[in-house]
Structure formats: structure tokens, C-alpha cells
Length: 253
Image (cartoon, rainbow, N blue to C red):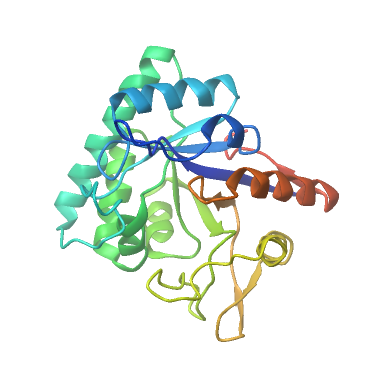
């Protein structure tokens, strides 16, 4: 039987601004990446999201991003590896504080947005992020783009890594995600999106925008909780996986 984790970026509301249907989508995912206040989220939202995830039996991870609330952490910034290290340590610590109050353990760390994409290609930044995670706890799982510099750095330092694939994103022939600046970056057809992830899980392959077949590892699948039909999409993926004999299970289960 094939087995895969389904993760979702959550806790991305801020102040009076509300984003996503957290209560519903937590019924269909096994891991939650909770924003730590830099790209989104605030202390109250973090606490509420941690509580909801625990109530739904969903494993919790930190989702550190660049300090860019107005850009939602999706704009690249010129940072040094040391700055990347410090940002990640700081944000893991913030979320871990709330987990401690609930007596819960953190499962993983998954960088957000531009920080994630930068670390996928920049070996030095990837190594700094992996070191930050390792220094907090070698038992943490590092989530990164499948077959990227980030997962390579995690494996090199001795972390357990989870190669991540995306249900709603298109891929390039080198295994990278198509830039969001391009019109074909997102897959809006539900059936096409689900067919892509089933192929990635069962066959370990994805068809790129250049129409080439790319080998890919799929340990965990990301569903974007802020998309318009996130809940119905998550439900559809779960039903499709069940019918294809794919077990949905958190990385640490």
C-alpha cells in the first residue's frame, strides 16, 4: 500500500483579517504548518490554530517565513545564511512556546513562500535552515521541495526529511515549481490536479510544463488552505486516495 502525508498551511490570519476555513480543512489533512508571525499569523491566531489542530488529531509544524506581512512572504529578500538561520530559530521558538502550553510536541518545520523557494535552490541558505532546525531538535522533520537543495541539506545533517509535492502547482523539467509570476503556475482544474498527485504518489513521476516526465519523491502533499475551494478539494483528494489504495498518514505516525 502507498502511504502519504497531506499538509496544509494554516494560521495565516492576522488581527482582523481572516484567511481560510481552518475548522473544516483540518478534517482532511494530517499535518498543519502554522504561520509564526513573520509572513502571517499573530500570537492569538497561533494559539487558536494549535488548539484546533490538537483537537483534530493533526500533527503540528512551524511555518517560518520572511518578515514581509504586506507581501505574504512571497517576495524574495536578500538575506545572508546567518539571517536565515536566526529567522527560523526565532519563529520555531515562538510556535514551540504555544505547543508547550498544550503539552504537545512539534512534528516538523516547513519554510514558507519565498524563503522555501530560495532554499530549494540556494545550498548555503538551505544548509543554514537545516542547521537551525537541527539545533532546535534533531528529532524534527524538515519539509522541503522534493529533490531540492533543502531536502539535500536536511539529509546531509542527519534530519529526517519529507519530500513535498504540490497538488495545485505545475512543474518545470528540472523539478522546480513554475513561478507564480507565470500564468500557468497554478492548476485550477480539480480532476487534473488530483490526477497529478495520484501519479506522483503511485508512480513517483510528474509531467512538466515542457511535457517531459520528471522523477519525483512524494512523502507529503501540500494543499493551500487559502485557496477558494480548499475544503472541497481536500475532501476530493481524500476520497480519491481511498479509492486508489493510498493511505493518508502523518509523517511521524
